Every structure is written in structure tokens, then in C-alpha cells.
Length: 380
Image 1: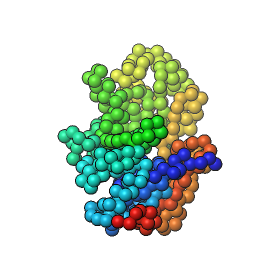
Image 2: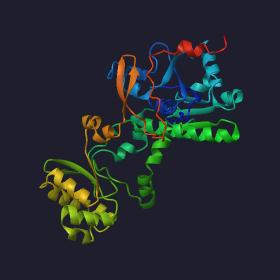
Image 3: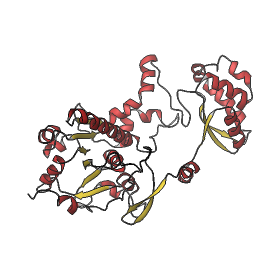
Image 4: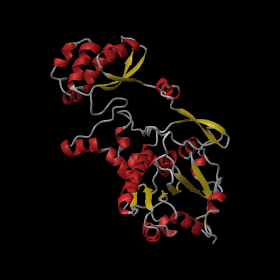
């Protein structure tokens, strides 16, 4: 196996919950030393969400493998000075405290850059470091609502949030990719830079297709449940003994669908259905026709017709089915990771760098590495 690409990189993270920990876990998986600063007593509050996996929180176990846990009281001395010493010696400093909090303890970008110009400074927040919403608290579901994601998710009768923490995950991934870009820029300039990641801005970026539809046509896409609100047909449809989800991406595919799946080729010639725009306008009638045909057919027959016609389709899996997904097993994606209570299963991160096996390090106990890390520092 090749050398880990981020080996030798030192990251200090004053982080909690999901967004920043998800970012820094990517760095740890690829070889960076990630020093996670936790508060005395309870540590990262995600530790207390549950005890689902060998006594550990499901979120904490997922987000914090391979990191070194250091307990510091950064509100007082000597913790504040010790944190500053750690930050001055690191390559990347990440935090997701509320805007202004990190500046109040003397670790704003200007202070850090003045002492250590090569350090890359990364702040994640709900709304960014300025503007009228700067000081508002921000959690995943709040940002899904504020960004309009929930207005497009759910059924026609009721909006819903996405079932995983997409605002946290999305902002964490933007922070991670921005750090990689800043490291590359530092190789040329010799200097670090400031990175500010706003959860609202990340989610609004993902909202651009419906925003463009509104800005261009004045039209607001309706919620469509487990069917696409801008492409028809695209979604889950009931067969005689189960549901299948399939996607039509072009008028040519729709013609093949009508011919090989519905076995009614004339439907594709109907001007009400010949283009996606027309199908969107007449979706109720078209989807009633699809439901009528599918309701008489076994799921296996529909899937076989979709495959034979070259139409993309998928099973509508639940959590147990995903845990036992044959594709993940065939590609040997499962590993084991140590937690204080034993071993737990973990999926390989999807970086898939050729010849590189990610670290998949242990999930740390609270304060497990405090002595090790602080012993490196000059005595105060």
C-alpha cells in the first residue's frame, strides 16, 4: 500500500456535533494527526446522543475515529494558552463554535495568521461570520428549513426534512475540500489562508435547480414524495408485490420505457407525454397509467423489463437491507474499528485513492490523549 497522502499533517479541531467532526474525520482517515479539543466533563456533546454501538453514540463513533482526544478548559488558563500553543504548531485549525467565540479567546484568523502565517484557519457556522443572521444558532434541521430544502421534501400534504444530516455533512465536505485546495495553494505561496464555511450557503448551492426554475419561469416545484418534482417519470411506483424506483432521463429513454416496460409504444407519441416539460404538466394522468400497468405485474417482472430496456432502476431499501447490501459486501467495504467498549463495524471512506488504505483508527475515549499531546508543549 502507498503512503497515506496526509501523513505528517497536524490538525487542531475545536469541534462538536457533526459538521466540523465530519470534515476532520476525512483528514484523519487519510493520515493526518487530528487533535480534537473537548470540554472537561462531557466532552463533545455528541458523545451523549445515545449508547447505540458498544456503549458509544452512533454519531460520535461515525465521526471521530482516528482522532486524539484532548480535554482542555479553553475558557480559562492554562487551557487557553495550551490551545494557542497547539494552534501555533499545526497546519490546519478547524472550529465550529458560534461566530465570535473563537475570537474572544484570541484565536481569530488575524491573531493566528500573525503568529503562524502557514496555518490554514477554518471556521464553520450556520450563517457565516457576518450578516443579520450571524449570531443565530444553527442545527441541521434548522438549516434544512431556512434554505428551503424541507419545502421541496416530503409529500404534497406535508414537508419533511431529509433523513440524514445533509446540512452538516454538506458543510463538512465543503470544508474538507476547501482545506485540500488551501494546502495545495500553500505549496505555491508558502502561506495559509482563511476559510469560512456557511451551512446556509452550502445548502442554498444545492437548491440552485429549483431556484433557477423560480428565477427563470416564476414556477415553484411542488413536493412529490418519493417521485422527482422536476422530471417525470422518476420515482417509486407500486407493483403487485413491492415497489420499484426508476428514472427516465431523456425522451429517448421514455420511448424505450413505453415500448419495453409499459408495452404501449403509442404513449410516447402522445404530445401530452413526448417531452419532459409536457410530462411534467400531465404527470397525474401519466403516473396513473404507470400505476395501472405496474399494479398487475410482479416486481421481478417490472425490474426485468426495466433492465432489458436500459432504464436505470433501484430497490427501495430500508436500513437493515442496506446493512446487508450485497454490493458493499462484494466490494469488501466493511472493516472493524476499535471503540473503548470493543470493536464495531465501519465502512471504508469512499475516497478510493489507488493503492491507499485509509487509517480507520480507533474512536478515542474522552481525554485519552491529553497527557500525550500536552507533554509536547513548552512548560507554561
